[in-house]
Image 1 (tube, helix red, strand yellow):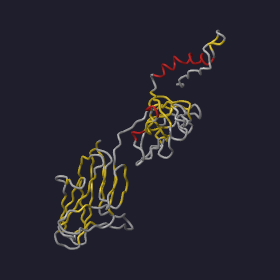
Image 2 (cartoon, helix red, strand yellow; image 1 turned 60 degrees about the vertical axis):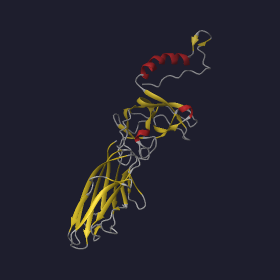
Image 3 (cartoon, one colour; image 1 turned 90 degrees about the horizontal axis):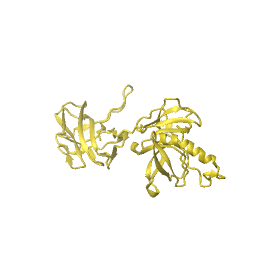
Image 4 (cartoon, helix red, strand yellow; image 1 turned 30 degrees about the vertical axis):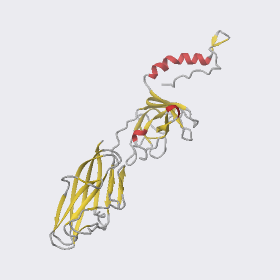
Length: 322
């Protein structure tokens, strides 16, 4: 599929000496029927470049705001997790210098006349997480964005061709957080929020607050909270610990308490809990706990020569529905 013909410049007359159609107009009219047929097979949009640098034909672009006259403004897209996947727009069908110029981006269909020499026919191309605007045929991994954008139809340095069909899933957010130091309750039978010390991995869900006891979600949805607590006791009397979830500092989730009893000394006891929580954008959840005796503490264990360290608290958060 070739690019649509451009209307000749005004300096190109329709006729030459009132006898012959000029070459420019002859080419325009000869290519016009095929261009009309091709237009039904390609979906393109007019966009504007205002980034400060040239965006070249064949580069991946994303939504970057609204330009003059309400044109969509685009920039080279980088799939490193810093920009939501939904912001990816398409592939440039022509080069746009940084002059506020308007041009075409392909959102579905063929883009030809580009360099595909580093790929093979049939390769699925993803938005690159390392070079803005470029492709990779290696599937990225989290926390990078995983966005299949196109497939390679022809390999070439100047005459390569791809078929653009971005596949953008609704992003689901996640995070894993831990506490790697011991924690002792200041008083028995008193509710405390558990401060965490580490963000092990995160995609949108963040650990906030001072101390860091607020697990904040960026968007509304249904989230699964799964926590593992490790306890130790300094004496052998019977002691109880309770764990539950609290939303936005005030709302304890009904029936979310997990209860564990410990009557051993210097040993360890673990308890896991899971809860599905419906949250609004920017809501935060706290892990709450209380003990009947302060001799019962949350305890971390250092690594040994044969096993990694054990966190006092390990929390995973997964969005399971938008």
